Amino acid sequence: MALATGVPNLVSAQAAGEVGIDRVTRETLCGIGRGRNCDIKLAVRLGLFETGLRPRFPANAQCRNIDEQWAIDYTPKRRREAYHGGIDMPAPFGAPIIAAAAGTVVSVSEGANSFRGREIILRHSPSDTGIDLWIYTQYAHFDRGPNLTVGARVAMGQVLGPTGNSGRRLKRGGRQQRQRRPAIHFAVWFSDHPGYAVHRNKIIPVKGRWMDPNALYRNTSPFASNAMKALPKSDKRVPIPVMFEDGKTYPTGTKLIWPYACKRK
Ligand SMILES: [Zn+2]
Image 1 (cartoon, protein in one colour):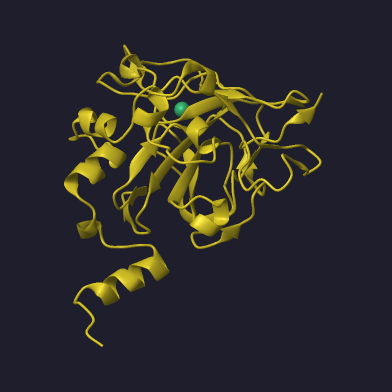
Image 2 (cartoon, helix red, strand yellow):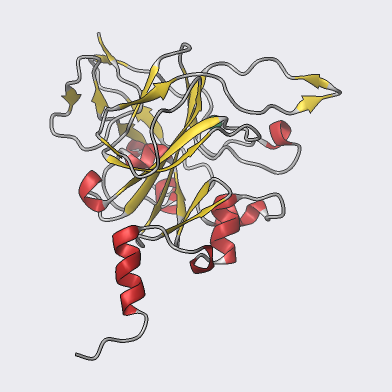
């Protein structure tokens, strides 16, 4: 039984998920973490660019739609080159934000100094989603909570917390910008490696990449932004699986849903 050195480490990483920050390359740390001293081009290289995907909700469903699209230019909002690392759907204060798939809580943050405010990140195993990748979903701007702790398991559709408008805003000319509208900020990362590091309340998947959140709902490989951008126009309207307010899903048996429940028309 000749086991190569390093194999036991890999096995324990697969079991636990969390690994040391030394297991993440500088490019991944910067490209996903987007720290102050990071070149934004690293994030772009990892998939943070516009793909043109748009959601198409079921005909009998009235759902909360996106008002700020994936990877749009946020440079004016951040006073340095920046792109929107997710999608935003406006909703009234208190509207329940729900888990897009079964998963495990890997981060809960008050986000006092973050643009995203109160947020939670879930990690989804291949068996959680039916997709042969490790997927991370982030939900932000909660009004309160979320009242979940790291390590907790959540079910698809479980309420994570109430919509709000938490999160720092830049001051302009000494005056605070107008209030942020209440909305969810929803982001997705993926990796074929099970490990992730925690760095300053950020989750950095080993070999992590950005995913246009609409791509997740295609529920089939590939998911990378370059492949999404290259799709024919007719494939860029993504049929979205949803949960209705009564807890039933469409289609039946889906392992992925939009992070707000929809009303029946
Ligand atoms: Zn956002």
